[in-house]
Image 1 (cartoon, protein in one colour):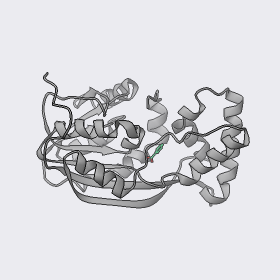
Image 2 (image 1 turned 90 degrees about the vertical axis):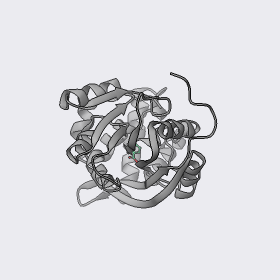
Image 3 (image 1 turned 60 degrees about the vertical axis):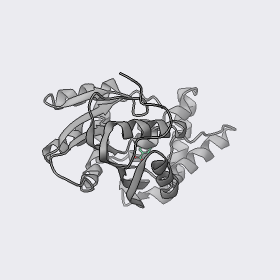
Image 4 (image 1 turned 180 degrees about the horizontal axis):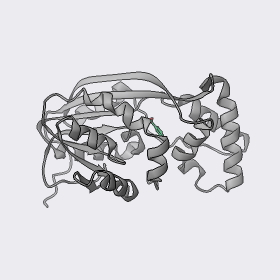
Length: 261
Ligand code: BEZ
């Protein structure tokens, strides 16, 4: 999925995404390791990794986010790369990824895991968190209803796997899963229009062919429909469910040979 990110807006209003990522650092086993932060966005967690004593580099597919990252932390290395189609000229002890992998279409997940496996040293760790099964079920259900009221079909734009689905995928890709947990994390959103702003920031592809007026009507109807469930004491919440894992590279990936480069 290709999204044009507004890096400034993202950093100002959605910084909770990388703040929650701090917990994930605790899953890294070892000190001073080399780490690739896959889908590093504005680089906040890459910087956090460096501060924690790791030799951290970032990679992201968005030139806008990378520009923001390089401006904030010019001393760090940030690479342009697609998580499901990258090669690196070195290998890492750890590939780390927070709140990114659900953006990759299911059909490209195995390609991504193959790229991650190849980027890791033998025994290297893949530590990550993504939206898991049931993530934003209320939000996507309400959007589906608002689309249906207008005779439109809503295509859910993300991949939110269960523990079983993802663990099997990891094993097929040459990893040993040493930790996997699925948990609810209702998350407060910033501002009086928190849910509306979240929808505008993150739900893009279902609205691609739609005029502004109809999009606005759908967003407003969706927000109204969710007030009872996701608005409490003056605060909007996102009904997040997280899938958090640690997997260790056990063998080279099956399938296509490593390309010569
Ligand atoms: C998530 O972190 O679960 C997420 C964020 C934006 C859009 C979809 C999912």
